Length: 63
Length: 398
Picture: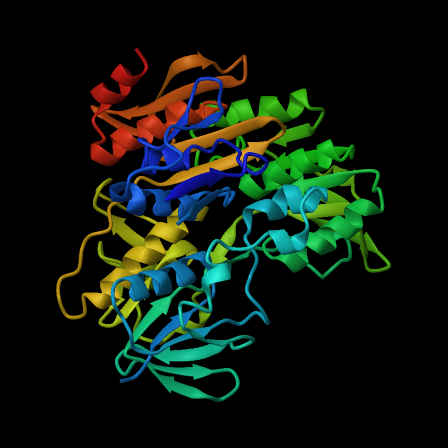
């Protein structure tokens, strides 16, 4: 599984961080950092949920 | 077996279908929507689409692309006229009758209008059509846009209009903007923000009505007898839950559809999103939340509740969360404070327009609001989801 963030769309709402903090982190500079671009399979549910609830639909999960 | 019928192709409605399918429901699902096509995603309508920086087609609901795979029979342009909760029988405006095995009420809400005759130049903002009609009027370069109501819609539209270079007056009857979701002290920050960007903000003013000539609006008449010339008026004075079709149905109505803590309104009937008030066990109070992410979560919970059938179902406890973009500021709030709660500034200051504040009631934290502080808000939200205790929130900021 590969996590791709479209940073042109991302507005740092940080919803993803609330759902999958192991993968997404918004730092004090207000920018989003992807901590694991290829997270382990056991995080799939959270990552998918994070992608789904992103208000900007900026996250894609590729198989 | 009769189909599950979802009324309203809203965020909540589609999310309920997604949860039904994810939970293993393989029976028929019928989706009834009064609009002729899938309603667009709403947050960009007061911002990017209105500003012209996003194409209308790009404002798509998150589940739009997956509608096919959810295997739903969609009937566009189908308004439901009446419903009988005891028999789960629906009657559409077309005369068609439909019996359901379960019903999801997801009819959202409709904007309130000012009383008086219809005048050109007067807008509400809820649908893509509303947005494009307003944009067409803004493109004509009016001398002044008057925004009635400084809630979410009003505040965001005022900001977008200013960024388009238009003169804006923002009128609010309450002593501060966004009073339905923010304590006055923090709402005052929103007023300051708009004033700093050149908006003529007037608080505590009642609007008496609109004056027009030749069918077009000319001025907004205020309760104090004065009036403000206006070529374009945007009315953002709240919404009314879409429950008209449920009158006499046996579904309990109050502040929208009245649901229990599991989203259930009557046997076999669930409701979610703007239209539904439910008992939020996490806060121990009833609430009706008109927020984007809430609609998704609430819809999913309602879908799962239908799957539980005659069982007790799971309570839907939630920490509501919203964001609002105004100028270069991002307001985000987790929780549900009330006007009387104490306001504690935990990070930054209101003066610098970048801060986080927490709301306190006794030993509970009822919410955390950040302005350009997304990290703090999301961290606070994670803690609030565990418990509303005040101490862990205070620790987060020290």
